[in-house]
Image 1 (cartoon, one colour):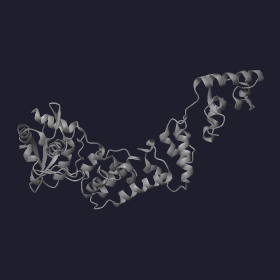
Image 2 (cartoon, one colour; image 1 turned 90 degrees about the vertical axis):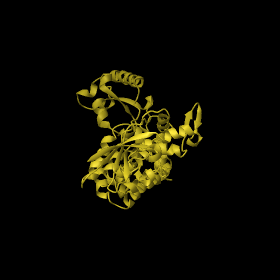
Image 3 (tube, one colour; image 1 turned 90 degrees about the horizontal axis):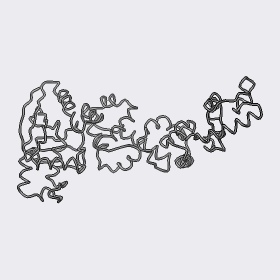
Image 4 (tube, rainbow, N blue to C red; image 1 turned 135 degrees about the vertical axis):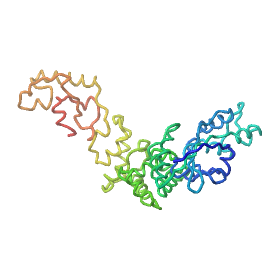
Amino acid sequence: MKATFQTYTVEQICDGFEYNELEAKGLYGMAGQLTIQPEYQRNYIYADGKKDVAVIESVLKGYPLGLFYFNKLEDGRLEVLDGQQRITSLGRFLQNRFAVKINGLEQIYTGLNKDKQQKILQTKLLVFICEGEGENAEEEIKEWFKTVNIAGIPLNQQEELNAVFSGPFVSLCKAEFSNSQNANIQRWNSYVKGPANRQQFLATALKWVSKGNVVSYMSSHRKDTNIDEIRTYFNTVLDWVDSKFDDVYPEMQGLDWGELYERFHSNAYNHTELSSIVRKLMQDDFVTNRRGVFEYVLGGCQDTKLLNIRLFDKPTMRKVYEQQTEVAKAEGISNCPYCSIGHDQNAHRIWKLNEMDADHVTAWSKGGSTSIENCQMLCKAHNRAKGNK
């Protein structure tokens, strides 16, 4: 691998720069000779009014922007390995896409005086240019790409996978799932945690369609020229969720709907009844894990552990224990109602408080409340055996 240093001005690098709001599209500079956003790169993530502004303020103050890394292709063209965020911020500012505060006033590029404009345009950027050689050139470049991206905002796992498996499939997937202008984003946000420009929708879609085997799936589909399978599966899962619940809750976001779809999509449900149960559970103060409500109802309302039902508090437990124990001693029987009707040595045993558990007389899942009127103390063995009966 050959490498050389070169210096370019901001004006040279941003020559021909046109920022496309459809973020999955490539960005170009140096009159089309520089690809600023190769297909294996992450999307632009500096547009937050802080990081992008900091780039321009650094230039105006004469601070260095650090080293940039370019890859030289066989045809002589260049592509950015590291520095895309900084270059895109510079290009966007030159296009008046955002403002910086100077002497207390917000100013866009064309609002700056000529001296400041020229200072930006003539700022020199130091570029390290790498040129791969031989049949392993592509792999060398991608490995270098991962290595130099250890500073700043680290690549997340999906961004790294996009780099490793770059090709038509990744490009099409990014255009579909990593484009913040996609009209479906609002709907997706109800069930999937974003943001799009950090590849979260794409990562989720890949996880669902591959049943968790993302690396294998991306490898086998790398050269595909359509994404019908992943698009269809992703939408099928979300359509299924929409069809089962009338209401959308914040707790739905980020659940593994793909896994729930695989487990439950063959079951027949009355969506009106399902939605009614969910609504009731979401309003129940004793349900402390509302994110578990959806799996609970889809699974037939059997596994109450998913809901993490609030237990009886200690004052309630002590009061019920004292009441049961007082009656049991007077009658000469065990203070565990289940032991008292038995015929072994525990039929007359008085258990200590720490040897007993609080239990719902009528199971919570069958409508029993977590109140003192529905509380009984059982020895630990009988409480475990009783379960949800």
